[in-house]
Image (cartoon, rainbow, N blue to C red; front, side):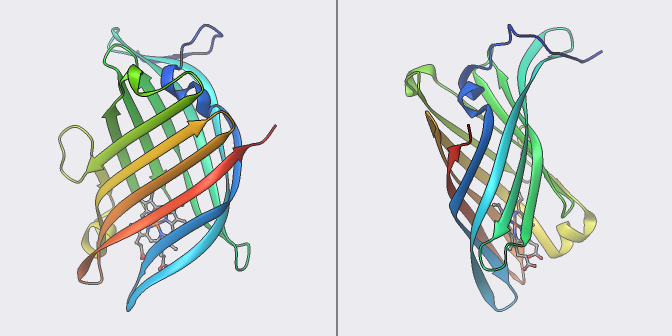
Length: 192
Ligand code: HEM
């Protein structure tokens, strides 16, 4: 059986710097609209909790963070994006994984390799990607979304330097009869 062991000896590897609560108000969302696109400046809160190891098939050991992201439009303060999931570190394969779910009935499992030499101790850069029908890192969506607002691809980079976190992500959509690069980026600081 899979298990989550909460203990203090867990090594979260490159995910360690993510742990904690973050806030940022420099966000910019570019999203599709029937006639073209909309741009939404936003603020958000993002929190990562260390939840221990998950052991798969008795052999694979993952160090796991659970996260929750809440994004609000600057123009009216309304929450317009809510996202949750896990970041997982597989030390044996030097692989970072990000599973996410959004309440549009879309789920993504993105992954990517991580090389130790890329980063110094107080800076880390995480790159993950997923593609529809990719056998390794894929996308699952409802029949409606598949037929009317299909997610084709997801790419994300997060950089953490001490108490500053920046990210940029691109979700490639097939919507309103064309492909659209739906992008989001923000800069956050750690809340003490
Ligand atoms: C900060 C992150 C994000 C924000 C602020 C955001 C915001 C938005 C907005 C404003 C729309 C247009 C909605 C409308 O026209 O009614 C949209 C559409 C969409 N987003 Fe996002 N999004 C984010 C991330 C994501 C991610 C990570 C995914 C999936 C991997 C995703 C998937 C979609 C899809 C499939 C649509 C098309 C639905 C539609 O427009 O009818 N978004 N998003």
